[in-house]
Amino acid sequence: MLEWYEILIIVIGSFVLLYVLGFIVNLAFVATFKRKINEHRKAITIVLTQKKEALLNLVLIMEKSDSKLDPRFFALLQDIDENYFSKIYSIETKKARETLSYVRQELAGISNKSNDLQKNEEFKLSIASINSLDEQFRVLLASYNADIIGYNYWIAFKPYRYLFLLNKTEKKDLIS
Image: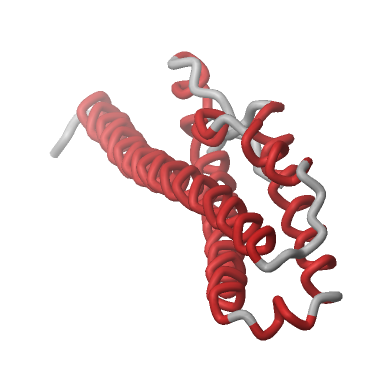
């Protein structure tokens, strides 16, 4: 028969073992979300860079077709530094994304008024490419934000939260 202190040691040891195993599982979830977040961040950077290049190409196509195009669109796109896209939370990145959206909307409005552009095969392919990049961006953004929510949940999970606070692990922000 076991003494009371032996039973107490076994019970406490069991709780400690369960706690450590739970922390290992929690750490695995955090590491998985962190890896996914980095993958999405790289993919978002690539898609935004491709979108900028596709919009520049669209501007050139529209200029070739003798559309009356304001030269500021080309200048706006040229002013965007592609290095901004890798700094996903910076103000410059947000402004660059807004500029890309603005230029896209303006070019779409101008192109809708031109029958010549609507018949141009190169223009149609360029628009299809931009639409595809927009869709990819929205999907990546949704996946990125979902993984951010998962990451934030697991670093704030009550039994282990203080261990992440000791490690100075911070919550990440969503991208709008």
